[in-house]
Length: 188
Length: 188
DNA sequence: CTGAAGTTTCAGTAATTTCTGAAAGTTTAG
DNA sequence: CTAAACTTTCAGAAATTACTGAAACTTCAG
Image (cartoon, rainbow over all chains, first blue to last red; front, top):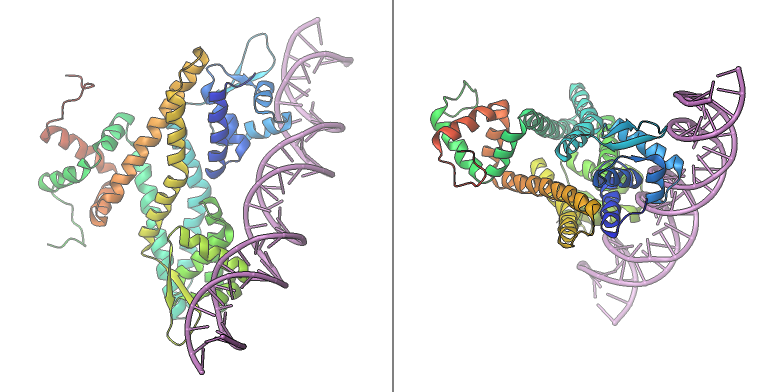
Protein backbone atom coordinates (compact mmCIF):
# COMPACT_ATOMS: atom_id res chain seq x y z
CA UNK A 1 0.00 0.00 0.00
CA UNK A 2 1.95 2.94 -1.29
CA UNK A 3 0.36 6.30 -1.97
CA UNK A 4 0.83 8.09 -5.27
CA UNK A 5 2.29 11.60 -4.94
CA UNK A 6 -1.09 13.20 -5.60
CA UNK A 7 -2.82 11.13 -2.98
CA UNK A 8 0.03 11.74 -0.58
CA UNK A 9 -0.26 15.51 -0.95
CA UNK A 10 -3.99 15.30 -0.42
CA UNK A 11 -3.75 13.04 2.61
CA UNK A 12 -1.09 15.11 4.35
CA UNK A 13 -2.92 18.33 3.71
CA UNK A 14 -6.12 16.90 5.16
CA UNK A 15 -4.20 15.70 8.14
CA UNK A 16 -3.34 19.32 8.89
CA UNK A 17 -6.86 20.49 8.16
CA UNK A 18 -8.37 17.76 10.28
CA UNK A 19 -6.43 18.98 13.25
CA UNK A 20 -8.20 22.34 12.90
CA UNK A 21 -11.58 20.70 12.56
CA UNK A 22 -11.86 18.74 15.71
CA UNK A 23 -9.80 15.61 15.27
CA UNK A 24 -6.07 15.05 15.22
CA UNK A 25 -3.70 14.83 12.30
CA UNK A 26 -3.69 11.05 12.05
CA UNK A 27 -7.46 10.82 12.11
CA UNK A 28 -7.67 13.34 9.29
CA UNK A 29 -5.12 11.39 7.27
CA UNK A 30 -6.93 8.11 7.73
CA UNK A 31 -10.22 9.61 6.62
CA UNK A 32 -8.65 11.30 3.61
CA UNK A 33 -6.97 8.06 2.62
CA UNK A 34 -10.22 6.14 2.78
CA UNK A 35 -12.03 8.79 0.77
CA UNK A 36 -9.69 8.69 -2.21
CA UNK A 37 -9.51 4.90 -2.28
CA UNK A 38 -12.07 3.15 -4.37
CA UNK A 39 -11.65 -0.03 -2.34
CA UNK A 40 -12.03 -0.33 1.44
CA UNK A 41 -8.72 -0.71 3.27
CA UNK A 42 -7.77 -2.75 6.30
CA UNK A 43 -5.88 -1.50 9.32
CA UNK A 44 -2.54 -2.82 8.15
CA UNK A 45 -2.82 -1.15 4.79
CA UNK A 46 -3.70 2.12 6.48
CA UNK A 47 -0.80 1.90 8.89
CA UNK A 48 1.60 1.04 6.12
CA UNK A 49 0.42 3.84 3.82
CA UNK A 50 0.68 6.45 6.55
CA UNK A 51 3.71 4.95 8.34
CA UNK A 52 2.01 4.87 11.70
CA UNK A 53 1.77 2.18 14.33
CA UNK A 54 -0.97 -0.42 14.44
CA UNK A 55 -2.16 0.96 17.75
CA UNK A 56 -2.48 4.43 16.36
CA UNK A 57 -4.56 3.18 13.46
CA UNK A 58 -6.87 1.50 15.92
CA UNK A 59 -7.29 4.73 17.91
CA UNK A 60 -7.99 6.65 14.72
CA UNK A 61 -10.59 4.17 13.54
CA UNK A 62 -12.28 4.35 16.92
CA UNK A 63 -12.41 8.13 16.73
CA UNK A 64 -13.83 8.09 13.20
CA UNK A 65 -16.44 5.67 14.45
CA UNK A 66 -17.47 8.05 17.19
CA UNK A 67 -17.96 10.72 14.52
CA UNK A 68 -19.90 8.15 12.48
CA UNK A 69 -17.71 8.79 9.49
CA UNK A 70 -16.77 5.26 8.46
CA UNK A 71 -18.31 1.96 7.49
CA UNK A 72 -16.94 -1.42 8.38
CA UNK A 73 -16.94 -4.21 5.85
CA UNK A 74 -15.99 -7.87 5.99
CA UNK A 75 -14.57 -9.48 2.93
CA UNK A 76 -15.52 -13.17 2.63
CA UNK A 77 -12.59 -15.49 3.29
CA UNK A 78 -10.58 -12.73 4.96
CA UNK A 79 -10.72 -12.19 8.68
CA UNK A 80 -9.49 -8.60 8.56
CA UNK A 81 -11.86 -5.69 8.84
CA UNK A 82 -12.08 -3.27 5.96
CA UNK A 83 -13.01 0.37 6.30
CA UNK A 84 -14.58 2.89 3.93
CA UNK A 85 -16.03 6.37 4.33
CA UNK A 86 -19.71 6.51 5.18
CA UNK A 87 -22.07 8.46 2.93
CA UNK A 88 -21.29 11.30 0.56
CA UNK A 89 -18.93 14.17 1.15
CA UNK A 90 -21.92 16.40 1.91
CA UNK A 91 -23.16 13.98 4.48
CA UNK A 92 -19.78 13.89 6.11
CA UNK A 93 -19.70 17.70 6.29
CA UNK A 94 -23.13 17.66 7.90
CA UNK A 95 -22.09 15.05 10.38
CA UNK A 96 -19.00 16.96 11.40
CA UNK A 97 -21.05 20.12 11.92
CA UNK A 98 -23.66 18.23 13.85
CA UNK A 99 -21.15 16.48 16.05
CA UNK A 100 -19.28 19.66 16.83
CA UNK A 101 -22.54 21.36 17.69
CA UNK A 102 -23.28 18.64 20.20
CA UNK A 103 -19.81 18.67 21.69
CA UNK A 104 -19.13 22.40 21.73
CA UNK A 105 -22.13 24.62 21.17
CA UNK A 106 -24.68 22.80 23.31
CA UNK A 107 -22.59 22.87 26.49
CA UNK A 108 -21.89 26.54 25.89
CA UNK A 109 -25.58 27.33 25.56
CA UNK A 110 -26.25 25.48 28.79
CA UNK A 111 -23.56 27.40 30.63
CA UNK A 112 -24.80 30.73 29.32
CA UNK A 113 -28.35 29.96 30.33
CA UNK A 114 -27.27 28.99 33.81
CA UNK A 115 -25.27 32.15 34.25
CA UNK A 116 -28.36 34.12 33.20
CA UNK A 117 -30.47 32.52 35.88
CA UNK A 118 -28.11 33.66 38.59
CA UNK A 119 -29.16 37.06 39.93
CA UNK A 120 -26.61 39.80 39.19
CA UNK A 121 -24.89 41.29 42.23
CA UNK A 122 -23.79 44.61 40.77
CA UNK A 123 -23.70 46.75 37.64
CA UNK A 124 -20.67 44.96 36.27
CA UNK A 125 -22.53 41.67 36.42
CA UNK A 126 -25.59 43.17 34.79
CA UNK A 127 -23.39 44.29 31.91
CA UNK A 128 -21.68 40.91 31.71
CA UNK A 129 -25.00 39.09 31.66
CA UNK A 130 -26.16 41.32 28.83
CA UNK A 131 -23.17 40.30 26.74
CA UNK A 132 -23.61 36.65 27.62
CA UNK A 133 -27.17 36.91 26.47
CA UNK A 134 -26.06 38.35 23.12
CA UNK A 135 -23.70 35.45 22.64
CA UNK A 136 -26.37 32.99 23.65
CA UNK A 137 -28.82 34.42 21.15
CA UNK A 138 -26.25 34.44 18.38
CA UNK A 139 -25.36 30.80 18.96
CA UNK A 140 -28.99 29.80 19.18
CA UNK A 141 -29.94 31.56 15.97
CA UNK A 142 -27.06 30.01 14.06
CA UNK A 143 -27.80 26.59 15.47
CA UNK A 144 -31.46 26.69 14.56
CA UNK A 145 -30.74 28.06 11.14
CA UNK A 146 -28.26 25.36 10.30
CA UNK A 147 -30.66 22.73 11.59
CA UNK A 148 -33.27 24.08 9.17
CA UNK A 149 -30.83 23.96 6.31
CA UNK A 150 -29.91 20.39 7.08
CA UNK A 151 -33.57 19.47 7.06
CA UNK A 152 -34.08 20.79 3.52
CA UNK A 153 -33.75 18.16 0.83
CA UNK A 154 -30.37 18.42 -0.90
CA UNK A 155 -31.84 19.66 -4.19
CA UNK A 156 -33.54 22.61 -2.50
CA UNK A 157 -30.46 23.35 -0.49
CA UNK A 158 -28.49 23.46 -3.68
CA UNK A 159 -30.99 25.82 -5.29
CA UNK A 160 -30.81 28.06 -2.29
CA UNK A 161 -27.04 28.19 -2.24
CA UNK A 162 -26.76 28.75 -5.95
CA UNK A 163 -29.25 31.56 -5.56
CA UNK A 164 -26.49 33.56 -3.97
CA UNK A 165 -27.05 37.28 -4.25
CA UNK A 166 -30.51 36.53 -5.61
CA UNK A 167 -31.56 35.68 -2.09
CA UNK A 168 -32.11 39.35 -1.47
CA UNK A 169 -34.55 39.56 -4.38
CA UNK A 170 -36.42 36.49 -3.22
CA UNK A 171 -36.83 38.00 0.21
CA UNK A 172 -38.56 41.07 -1.21
CA UNK A 173 -40.88 38.88 -3.26
CA UNK A 174 -41.78 37.08 -0.10
CA UNK A 175 -42.68 40.40 1.51
CA UNK A 176 -44.98 41.16 -1.39
CA UNK A 177 -46.80 37.87 -1.46
CA UNK A 178 -46.82 36.53 2.06
CA UNK A 179 -48.72 38.27 4.80
CA UNK A 180 -46.37 38.54 7.73
CA UNK A 181 -47.50 36.82 10.91
CA UNK A 182 -48.37 38.85 13.93
CA UNK A 183 -45.07 40.09 15.29
CA UNK A 184 -44.69 42.38 18.29
CA UNK A 185 -41.60 43.93 16.71
CA UNK A 186 -43.17 44.92 13.44
CA UNK A 187 -43.16 48.60 12.67
CA UNK A 188 -46.66 49.07 11.27
CA UNK B 1 -8.74 43.15 38.95
CA UNK B 2 -10.57 40.17 40.35
CA UNK B 3 -13.22 38.32 38.40
CA UNK B 4 -16.61 37.56 39.89
CA UNK B 5 -17.53 33.85 39.91
CA UNK B 6 -19.93 34.31 36.98
CA UNK B 7 -17.35 36.07 34.88
CA UNK B 8 -14.75 33.53 35.86
CA UNK B 9 -16.93 30.62 34.72
CA UNK B 10 -17.61 32.40 31.45
CA UNK B 11 -13.99 33.28 30.82
CA UNK B 12 -12.67 29.81 31.53
CA UNK B 13 -15.30 28.18 29.40
CA UNK B 14 -14.49 30.45 26.50
CA UNK B 15 -10.85 29.67 26.93
CA UNK B 16 -11.65 26.04 26.24
CA UNK B 17 -13.97 26.94 23.37
CA UNK B 18 -11.43 29.31 21.87
CA UNK B 19 -8.93 26.51 21.65
CA UNK B 20 -11.37 24.63 19.40
CA UNK B 21 -12.00 27.68 17.28
CA UNK B 22 -8.57 28.56 16.05
CA UNK B 23 -6.79 30.31 18.88
CA UNK B 24 -5.35 29.05 22.13
CA UNK B 25 -6.89 28.97 25.57
CA UNK B 26 -5.30 32.19 26.80
CA UNK B 27 -6.37 34.13 23.74
CA UNK B 28 -9.93 32.94 24.23
CA UNK B 29 -9.84 33.95 27.87
CA UNK B 30 -8.51 37.40 27.12
CA UNK B 31 -11.17 38.02 24.53
CA UNK B 32 -13.95 36.76 26.82
CA UNK B 33 -12.68 38.95 29.63
CA UNK B 34 -12.70 42.03 27.45
CA UNK B 35 -16.19 41.26 26.18
CA UNK B 36 -17.82 41.12 29.58
CA UNK B 37 -16.04 44.21 30.89
CA UNK B 38 -17.74 47.47 30.31
CA UNK B 39 -14.46 49.35 30.59
CA UNK B 40 -11.35 48.67 28.49
CA UNK B 41 -8.58 46.88 30.40
CA UNK B 42 -4.83 47.26 30.29
CA UNK B 43 -2.32 44.44 29.99
CA UNK B 44 -1.57 44.31 33.70
CA UNK B 45 -5.21 44.03 34.64
CA UNK B 46 -5.66 41.23 32.12
CA UNK B 47 -2.63 39.36 33.39
CA UNK B 48 -3.72 39.75 36.97
CA UNK B 49 -7.29 38.64 36.32
CA UNK B 50 -6.20 35.55 34.44
CA UNK B 51 -3.04 34.87 36.47
CA UNK B 52 -0.79 34.77 33.45
CA UNK B 53 2.54 36.37 32.73
CA UNK B 54 2.95 39.77 31.19
CA UNK B 55 4.63 38.21 28.17
CA UNK B 56 1.75 35.87 27.59
CA UNK B 57 -0.71 38.74 27.67
CA UNK B 58 1.33 40.52 25.05
CA UNK B 59 1.31 37.43 22.80
CA UNK B 60 -2.42 37.08 23.23
CA UNK B 61 -3.08 40.71 22.41
CA UNK B 62 -0.95 40.38 19.29
CA UNK B 63 -2.92 37.34 18.19
CA UNK B 64 -6.26 39.07 18.77
CA UNK B 65 -4.94 41.95 16.72
CA UNK B 66 -4.16 39.65 13.83
CA UNK B 67 -7.76 38.43 13.97
CA UNK B 68 -8.85 42.08 14.12
CA UNK B 69 -10.89 41.40 17.21
CA UNK B 70 -9.78 44.19 19.50
CA UNK B 71 -9.50 47.94 19.70
CA UNK B 72 -6.74 49.85 21.37
CA UNK B 73 -7.50 52.92 23.43
CA UNK B 74 -5.35 55.46 25.21
CA UNK B 75 -6.65 57.03 28.36
CA UNK B 76 -5.44 60.64 28.81
CA UNK B 77 -2.85 60.98 31.54
CA UNK B 78 -2.12 57.24 31.57
CA UNK B 79 0.64 55.80 29.47
CA UNK B 80 -0.75 52.28 29.48
CA UNK B 81 -2.68 50.90 26.55
CA UNK B 82 -6.26 49.81 27.09
CA UNK B 83 -8.01 47.13 25.10
CA UNK B 84 -11.63 46.46 24.25
CA UNK B 85 -13.41 44.12 21.84
CA UNK B 86 -13.99 45.51 18.37
CA UNK B 87 -17.51 45.64 16.96
CA UNK B 88 -20.54 43.60 17.94
CA UNK B 89 -20.66 39.93 18.75
CA UNK B 90 -22.05 39.27 15.27
CA UNK B 91 -19.18 41.11 13.68
CA UNK B 92 -16.74 39.12 15.70
CA UNK B 93 -18.35 35.86 14.57
CA UNK B 94 -18.13 37.04 10.97
CA UNK B 95 -14.53 38.00 11.37
CA UNK B 96 -13.60 34.65 12.83
CA UNK B 97 -15.32 32.83 9.97
CA UNK B 98 -13.69 35.07 7.43
CA UNK B 99 -10.25 34.70 8.92
CA UNK B 100 -10.52 30.95 9.14
CA UNK B 101 -11.65 30.81 5.54
CA UNK B 102 -8.56 32.70 4.50
CA UNK B 103 -6.24 30.60 6.61
CA UNK B 104 -7.74 27.17 6.06
CA UNK B 105 -10.21 26.91 3.22
CA UNK B 106 -8.44 28.99 0.61
CA UNK B 107 -5.18 27.02 0.74
CA UNK B 108 -7.18 23.79 0.53
CA UNK B 109 -9.02 24.99 -2.56
CA UNK B 110 -5.71 25.91 -4.16
CA UNK B 111 -4.23 22.51 -3.43
CA UNK B 112 -7.28 20.70 -4.77
CA UNK B 113 -7.24 22.74 -7.96
CA UNK B 114 -3.59 22.01 -8.51
CA UNK B 115 -4.07 18.30 -8.01
CA UNK B 116 -6.86 18.44 -10.59
CA UNK B 117 -4.59 19.99 -13.19
CA UNK B 118 -2.14 17.13 -12.91
CA UNK B 119 -2.98 14.40 -15.41
CA UNK B 120 -4.06 11.14 -13.76
CA UNK B 121 -1.71 8.20 -14.30
CA UNK B 122 -4.11 5.35 -13.66
CA UNK B 123 -7.65 4.43 -12.66
CA UNK B 124 -6.95 4.88 -8.97
CA UNK B 125 -5.87 8.45 -9.62
CA UNK B 126 -8.92 9.12 -11.76
CA UNK B 127 -11.09 7.99 -8.87
CA UNK B 128 -9.11 10.07 -6.37
CA UNK B 129 -9.37 13.16 -8.54
CA UNK B 130 -13.12 12.68 -8.74
CA UNK B 131 -13.39 12.71 -4.98
CA UNK B 132 -11.08 15.70 -4.69
CA UNK B 133 -13.31 17.49 -7.13
CA UNK B 134 -16.37 16.75 -4.99
CA UNK B 135 -14.64 18.19 -1.97
CA UNK B 136 -13.51 21.21 -3.93
CA UNK B 137 -17.04 21.91 -5.13
CA UNK B 138 -18.46 21.48 -1.66
CA UNK B 139 -16.00 23.92 -0.15
CA UNK B 140 -16.52 26.40 -2.94
CA UNK B 141 -20.31 26.32 -2.65
CA UNK B 142 -20.19 26.79 1.11
CA UNK B 143 -17.64 29.58 0.80
CA UNK B 144 -19.65 31.49 -1.77
CA UNK B 145 -22.86 30.99 0.13
CA UNK B 146 -21.45 32.31 3.36
CA UNK B 147 -19.95 35.26 1.52
CA UNK B 148 -23.40 36.08 0.18
CA UNK B 149 -24.90 35.86 3.61
CA UNK B 150 -22.27 38.17 5.02
CA UNK B 151 -23.05 40.66 2.31
CA UNK B 152 -26.74 40.85 3.25
CA UNK B 153 -27.59 43.64 5.61
CA UNK B 154 -28.08 42.33 9.14
CA UNK B 155 -31.84 42.98 9.13
CA UNK B 156 -32.37 40.84 6.02
CA UNK B 157 -30.08 38.17 7.39
CA UNK B 158 -32.17 38.09 10.50
CA UNK B 159 -35.39 37.78 8.49
CA UNK B 160 -33.88 34.94 6.54
CA UNK B 161 -32.76 33.05 9.60
CA UNK B 162 -36.01 33.52 11.41
CA UNK B 163 -37.74 32.25 8.32
CA UNK B 164 -36.37 28.85 9.20
CA UNK B 165 -38.47 26.06 7.78
CA UNK B 166 -40.45 28.65 5.88
CA UNK B 167 -37.54 28.96 3.50
CA UNK B 168 -38.92 25.98 1.65
CA UNK B 169 -42.20 27.78 0.99
CA UNK B 170 -40.43 30.90 -0.20
CA UNK B 171 -38.41 28.87 -2.64
CA UNK B 172 -41.53 27.53 -4.31
CA UNK B 173 -42.95 31.02 -4.56
CA UNK B 174 -39.80 32.08 -6.27
CA UNK B 175 -40.24 29.29 -8.79
CA UNK B 176 -43.70 30.59 -9.57
CA UNK B 177 -42.73 34.19 -10.05
CA UNK B 178 -39.21 34.28 -11.35
CA UNK B 179 -38.35 32.89 -14.74
CA UNK B 180 -35.31 30.70 -14.27
CA UNK B 181 -32.23 31.69 -16.24
CA UNK B 182 -31.07 29.48 -19.04
CA UNK B 183 -29.53 26.47 -17.34
CA UNK B 184 -28.10 23.47 -19.20
CA UNK B 185 -29.22 21.21 -16.35
CA UNK B 186 -32.85 22.16 -16.32
CA UNK B 187 -35.28 19.39 -17.07
CA UNK B 188 -37.76 21.16 -19.35
C1' DC C 1 -11.05 -26.49 23.33
C1' DT C 2 -6.88 -24.65 21.08
C1' DG C 3 -4.15 -21.60 18.87
C1' DA C 4 -3.69 -18.55 14.99
C1' DA C 5 -5.14 -14.24 13.25
C1' DG C 6 -6.76 -10.47 14.17
C1' DT C 7 -8.07 -5.98 17.28
C1' DT C 8 -7.79 -2.94 21.34
C1' DT C 9 -5.77 -0.94 25.32
C1' DC C 10 -2.61 1.69 27.79
C1' DA C 11 1.87 2.91 30.16
C1' DG C 12 5.66 5.17 28.82
C1' DT C 13 7.90 8.17 25.43
C1' DA C 14 8.08 11.58 21.86
C1' DA C 15 6.45 15.65 19.66
C1' DT C 16 4.11 19.79 19.86
C1' DT C 17 2.22 23.69 21.88
C1' DT C 18 1.97 27.09 25.27
C1' DC C 19 3.85 29.93 29.01
C1' DT C 20 7.29 32.40 31.74
C1' DG C 21 10.37 35.94 32.82
C1' DA C 22 14.48 38.29 31.88
C1' DA C 23 16.44 41.14 28.37
C1' DA C 24 15.81 44.17 24.55
C1' DG C 25 13.01 47.63 22.50
C1' DT C 26 9.91 51.76 22.40
C1' DT C 27 7.78 55.94 23.79
C1' DT C 28 7.37 60.14 26.05
C1' DA C 29 7.72 63.67 29.89
C1' DG C 30 10.80 66.73 31.43
C1' DC D 1 19.08 63.77 25.63
C1' DT D 2 17.82 60.91 29.69
C1' DA D 3 15.46 57.95 32.31
C1' DA D 4 11.11 56.16 33.75
C1' DA D 5 7.19 53.64 32.24
C1' DC D 6 5.67 50.76 29.52
C1' DT D 7 5.57 46.84 25.60
C1' DT D 8 7.55 43.11 22.91
C1' DT D 9 10.48 39.31 22.01
C1' DC D 10 12.26 34.90 22.57
C1' DA D 11 15.03 30.99 24.70
C1' DG D 12 14.15 27.62 27.70
C1' DA D 13 10.74 25.23 30.89
C1' DA D 14 6.25 23.35 31.61
C1' DA D 15 2.09 21.47 30.09
C1' DT D 16 -0.48 19.17 26.84
C1' DT D 17 -1.35 16.07 23.23
C1' DA D 18 -0.25 12.30 20.18
C1' DC D 19 2.24 7.94 19.15
C1' DT D 20 4.44 3.47 19.85
C1' DG D 21 4.65 -1.21 20.79
C1' DA D 22 4.10 -4.89 23.91
C1' DA D 23 0.51 -7.18 26.44
C1' DA D 24 -4.27 -8.25 26.90
C1' DC D 25 -8.22 -9.32 24.68
C1' DT D 26 -11.50 -11.29 20.99
C1' DT D 27 -12.94 -14.15 17.35
C1' DC D 28 -13.14 -18.07 14.77
C1' DA D 29 -11.53 -22.32 12.03
C1' DG D 30 -10.45 -26.80 12.82
